[in-house]
Image (cartoon, rainbow, N blue to C red; front, side, top):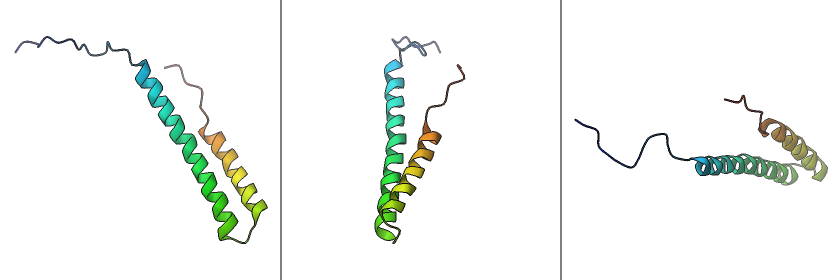
Length: 79
C-alpha cells in the first residue's frame, strides 16, 4: 500500500509552546505541593500537639528549606 498524503509531517511541528506549558505546570505542581505540605505540617504541629507556635514555625521552616534545596532546578547536561 502506498503512503497517504497529508499535511502532517512527523517531527516538523514547533513545540515550544507545549514545552513551556509543561514546564510551568510541573513547576506549579512541585512548589504548590511543597507549600501544601508546609501548611499541613504547621497546622498539625500547632493544633494537634502541645508543642506550640515556635515548634510549629521552626519545624515548618526546616522542612521548607530542605524542600527548596531538594526541588530547585538542577543544571541540565546540555542534551
